[in-house]
Image (cartoon, rainbow, N blue to C red):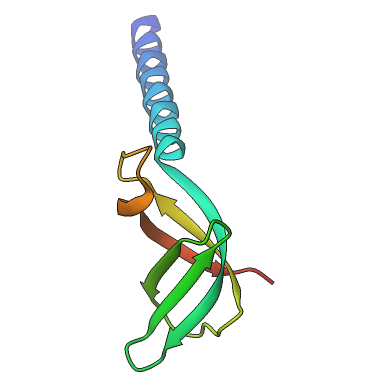
Amino acid sequence: MKRVRDMVIGVIGALVVVLILGIAGWYETHYTITGTVVEVNTFQELVTVEDNDGNLWEFYGTNFQVNDTVKMVMDTNCTYNDIEDDEIEKVNVVF
């Protein structure tokens, strides 16, 4: 019985370590930025956002209007010094 309990504790411990490493890895490659919608092409559903550093980002979405403030969750694509290849994963309007 003690052997089974020790094995269960070992498996749970290993799962906790893997979970912590996974969460840390996600936070290492993701960040959020805030920007303002500067253009909405309703025909193509293409939204253009300018962030606080003057970078322009585009994504496809609906129900966005010019001058909306949005928060974007970004993926670095594991290139930490180059934002040119970063991808938008999620966009929310900030109220």
